[in-house]
Image (cartoon, rainbow, N blue to C red; front, side, top):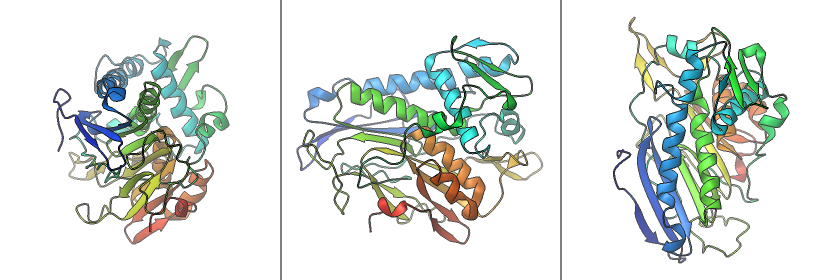
Length: 365
């Protein structure tokens, strides 16, 4: 169920392991957010659900292209001018350009004009992230790693090189924390914003005292710290085979969304994101159907065999970018693109399921 951002949806439970689990749900970023916090006692988590809501609300207000006075809307509306932006917006754009370079343009957040031309001109109906139980099992795209962390958390930005990419029409001025887009270009946060928001909020919740945290925005999520199935402060290091000591997530089957999950995966610390052409669809004036995943080579909604691409990575922003890149590459080309940044995942195509190399480390059989 999707709830409004002003509704009270906070619940508190205690697991058999004695861990206090606080959960909150609210609408945001054209989706539903599900925040799960763990702690040794309720007092340690007091005020943290409100902190999460406030931070996600701020990020939406400065990033949304559907809010006329957001920082990104003002940036896109005035091409050719340098704009002073917040640290969050600067880092979002920097990561977007880094992901573009790291994926050789397969993920490209600078095609706002093509997205708009395809008909994505207004916010669509929220996407329900599905329930998360007290064992930490979100029924949405998901994850696990026995060794703890999934992939590298900074490879994308460092290996991409530089702080701006004039070839794509977006430039950064690190000394002044400024951004400029060239005429005919625009920055679209839709393919990376939810993942980066999850990264920021999880890190802040852990710093504020949460023993563990999961922030799931529309099925793109980041987890860190103690999962609900273990006592906080026990110093767990590995996840048992049944996944009780990890954050466990079910990968939805787009061919039967209401049916059993396709794969069960778990993670100690990391992120997951899914790109899908089965949601966020609309009908254009000519009667044709379109979706939000744009193929940079055609500047049109992508066509092909892939229905969904789910990626497991160290950070949400990396997972989101690689999910889009894997979706566009298809079952034959996705593996090297994803593996190059230390990630893995699973694709669902019209003819079956394709597990990418490395997924076994996360699978719950």
